[in-house]
Length: 350
Image 1 (cartoon, rainbow, N blue to C red):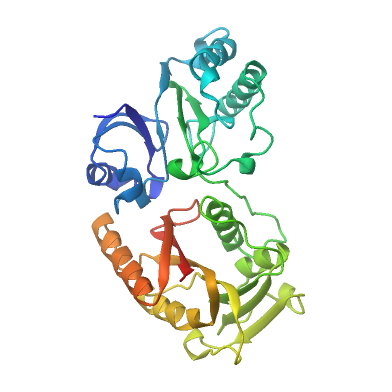
Image 2 (cartoon, one colour):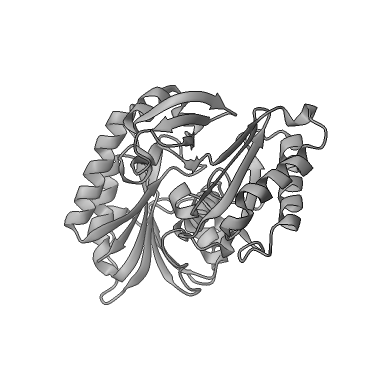
C-alpha cells in the first residue's frame, strides 16, 4: 500500500462512495469533512488511469497530517506553519495553497484559518514562483496543498493536473446568482474553461465557438463576455438580453437540422444539450467536421437513464469510443461543481 491519500467524492455520488473507492482500489481509513475520504491506495496511478477516476473530484497524497481540533489549540497557525516549513521548505513547491476541509457550506472559521495559515507559511518559505496567482501554477509541477478542518491538518505535494484542480479541493467555484445572470449554466462553462487549463492553453480572445442547445443563453453570455465569437443553435429562443449582442450569430432551429455555412470553421464546440447523451454526441460528431484541426470540444455527458456508477461508466465508455472513431481524442473527463449525475468530457480534434 502507498502512503495515505485524500480522495474527494462529490456529494451527488455519496451513496455510491464504497463502490467508487473499491473501483479505485482504495481501502477506506476515515471519512473527513463533508465529502473527503482518507484511504490507503493499492496503486495511485488508478486516480489517473481508471474509469473510476472521474468520480474522484480531487485527490492528494497525505505527506503530512496533524490530527487535532484547531479551534481548541492555542497557537495553531504558528505551530502548523513552522511544521510545514520544516517538512516542505527544502522541497521547493511552486506555491503553497490552503483551504477548508469542509466543501459545502464552509464554516467561516476554517476558511479564515486556512487563509491565515497560508499567509504565515509564505512568510517562512523562500519566495515561491507561483505564489502570486493560483492560475500561475504549472499544471505538471508540484504544489503544496493543505486542507484544514475540525479533524486537523492534512497536506501533500502534487501537481495540479494530478490532483485534478488548481485549488485545494478541486476547481474554482464560480458563483453566478446576480440578477443580471441569465442562468447558472454560465458558471458551468466558466468552470470548465478554468479546468481545461490543466490540460491545454486557454483559447485566445476572438476564438469562434459553435454552441449546441444554447437556450436560454447562460453559457452563450459567458463565452461572449470572455471575448469569444459564438454561433449558437437552439429551437427555443435565447434570452432577450442577448438580442443584438456583438459576436453572436443565432440559429433558431433544431440542432439535428443545423448545417454550418459552406467553409465555416470553428475553434471549439460546446454541447450541454438535455436528453439522451448518445443522440447529443451524434450531433457533436457530425458537426465536429467544421472544427479546425486541434479544435476543442466541451461536452456534457448527461446521465439520463444511467443511475448507477457502473451504468455511468458504460455510458462514458460508449461516448469516448464513438468520439475516437470520429477522430476526436479524449483529453479529460471530470465532474464539475454544477454537474449532477453527469460528467464534462473534453475532446480534441485530431
